[in-house]
Structure formats: structure tokens, C-alpha cells
Image 1 (cartoon, rainbow, N blue to C red):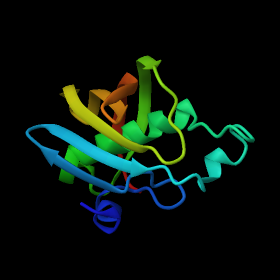
Image 2: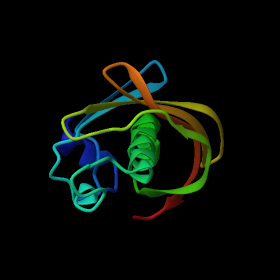
Image 3: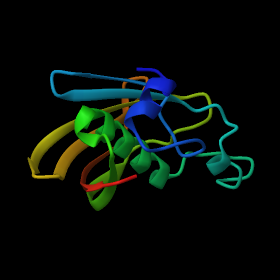
Length: 138
């Protein structure tokens, strides 16, 4: 799916829509985001040495999780309930293409527990266990 198709699924909009494309196959969502260097979150992080903040990498992982849920997310808003075992292994810089993979480990009603990874050029940049609840309404 491209950005326009993602907007039909996810409640996020610019400047917080942080996926350029995504696909979900065999229970795994894979999404990409191209870091241009013009993003709002790079303007002061850090002057002369722009690095994608870890919290933004967590948000990108969360949006990939939204893709993973497919039509279950329609009409609902995903809210974090936890960010656990999250580790940052490598800087993500302008010009990098972020590739996220997300998989649901378990779910109960509208509560989901997922494992996610962020890679650039195949190298692990971040990983974490994210949990969130889908709440009715947008």
C-alpha cells in the first residue's frame, strides 16, 4: 500500500504519518519510510548532526503495527499501553530508508502485544515489544 492507501487504514496524517509504503503478508507487516532530512523532528535533533529520535522510531514501529491489524483498525484509534524491551542499536540518518517489520505475538479482545524491528540496509537499528489498545472512534 502507498501513502494514500495507508490513510484509508491508519488515523495518522501529515506530519505524523511516518510510513511511505507497507505490505502485510503471512502475519508480518513490513513498512518503509524514506528519511529525507527535511522532517520536522530533525530540525533541532541535532543541529549539524541530524539523527532520527528514538521516540520517532517507536512511532514508526507503532504505525507498522496498525498496518498489521488490517481492517480491525477501521473506525478505531490505537493507543500505546506499553513500550517494553526497546533497544536502539544504530543511528538513523537523513538519506536512510527505514524498513520496519512487525508481528503480533498475542492479543486479547482489542489489546495487542507486538514485536517490532527497525533496519537500515539490513542492519538492526531498533527493536521493541509494543502493546496498545484499539479504542472506538477516531
